[in-house]
Length: 453
Image (tube, rainbow, N blue to C red; front, side, top):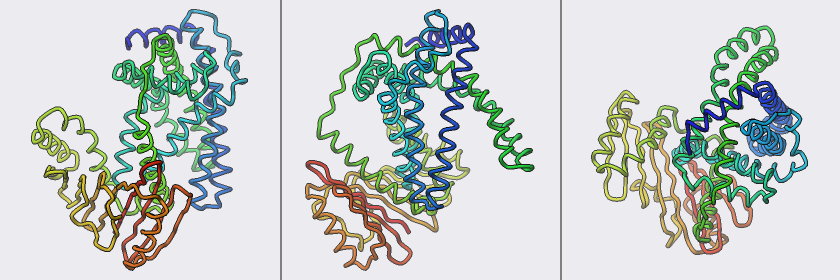
């Protein structure tokens, strides 16, 4: 993709059709924003009765409802953008042209809403979840383009929602690096209004919030929403320009072995269940300090370096940069199948293809299970580890094994969740807490163990 050409086309189209495109963006933001705020207040603040569990479950409702509202509105905006890019007259009434496709367009947006929700829950897992969240933030520009393509394929080409998303992914894969860079640039431009409005909006909220809390929030939003609407059209015009180019090209075929898909689904389901336990109980947020998280989160920035230069050179580069960022000495060592990081405060992070050396003896490891990955770490006053395994035994057998063995080792079973092919056990002994998530697919059962102290 020609990044410069796409941005120039978008800017020229916006200048020539400023009023209708700005007003359309303002309507989309206002409608979706108000709907989300009202529904969140009803479901998360009122109906959850202040409980974290119900709040986590009910928070999905506003996301899905707003996704269904946003789908046809964004499809209408894409239609307006296509006319603007083609030099045609833009009529604001076209914003509602695709309300008759509420369900299929809502389904496309709901797929991405569910993905965001799942990643938010998984992000509550100490260390591993935070690294996954970092990876998701890096691919967010790609998701923006894929969502735009999917909406366009449903609205303009009458495709089935799932087929539209699959084709959108295939189009992205035709030139993933350039399309990602293009999406990143237009995404930054589209967000400029939001970032410009942050400080003034915060000042308004602080000044008038002291007089009346609601008034401060209202005035801050009254200022921030138009600012965002000023820059958002550039991003949507840019995404529409990408749709015009990519929809005419032949999408790359996506051929993923069924076993790989099953394993990925199994791992994701296990991580989601595990993340939900951490999210609801708050274990992850209570144990890992922001400083430790900052060190672990930055690790992702050096994964490319480790693959392109010699191992020791990469370790030294990462050590120097992490030392500068943390204000102390960071040591990275690579021994066999284990990578270990240490900071100056005594915090450690280890990734291994086997069980950690300090794996507690009173935590049962399922017989014959294969260890996929283990992550362990901690600071002077807290430690934790996570181990992911697979076995060919069914979920009932594994579930029964952990119920019996954990009790036999003196652990107290706090919570058990049985959803058929997905089951979770939360357990505790003295100052230590743990959980095991068990998920079954056609041929394998995944086991994820987490222990915190």
